[in-house]
Image (cartoon, rainbow, N blue to C red; front, side):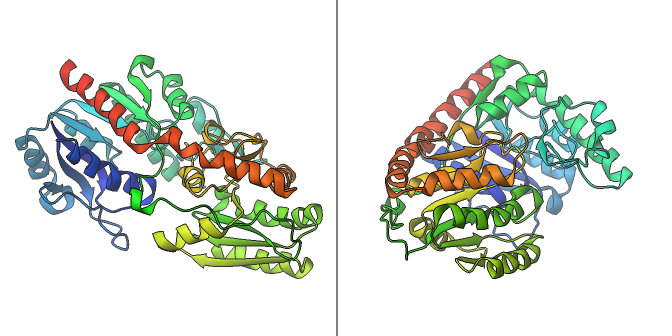
Length: 408
């Protein structure tokens, strides 16, 4: 089968870029030809998505729209595997070329801002069905920015995207939460699939047992880890405010490492300095973005991943990545997180409607309250990634591909 991957960029950006870098080699090894069609070549500070050596690539930016569409059509793909384009009118043109399957990595077509979150009066996940009524909520609930032109432009873009989705032979996503999101927006339930997956690391890179200790030595700090983008909805502020109470409840030193970057990094660093001055048993450091090997080392040397996302994460793959290192997780019960984080098994959930500092404090303390509990949670995390095997994901994905191609 000739499978053309459609994505807005050819760069390895976020979870989508990581996913495409993993899935294309799997498809090729399964005997399929793959190609990449994309709109833009940016942002240039991200590496290109690695492609199989013989895979064709067509850039709308380089070729122009009509020649790029003609090149895609002349390749005669049996199936398009789409991951989101910037321009719905371009997306509509591609759907004239071949049967298509869409992967909903995020709230594509179901939220003006894409965050699915109210920020006023408190940050709270939104479960509304997308429609014109969202325009009335946008400013009072601070769903996005304050520019009305941007609001209307984004509303039209998402409306057009939602109207295109029924043209796909199947919608696939990676959580029941996202599956329900699209069924609730009127997509045919028989054509919306949860094809779950975790990170795809080669067997040679399978991590060893975490080196984080579970002994009761009170001189050794508990090592906490945050991995991700540093913006308001990722909850770093709430995590920092929770730390003093965590220390008081545990009666033990706590060390927190922030791995990542984003617009609020300097703000969080300043807040961390204030918090640490008030509580000398706390130490917080910021590493910036680090490479794969360094992330693995941080996972292996940590006792707990804290995932304080305030918005409804579609799945939060970083938690499943932590499971490969037998690392428990404390997080808010938002979005798809509760599908892999089970309180008392591989970590603890804090209430997420709304998320609160006190709830996060309790979840962290529950994970680390004694060495026996922590050891049990590590054991529970160790078997979790088997439930989200990437090979199984590709196997189920190919079944959907075959069904859609045959039905065309």
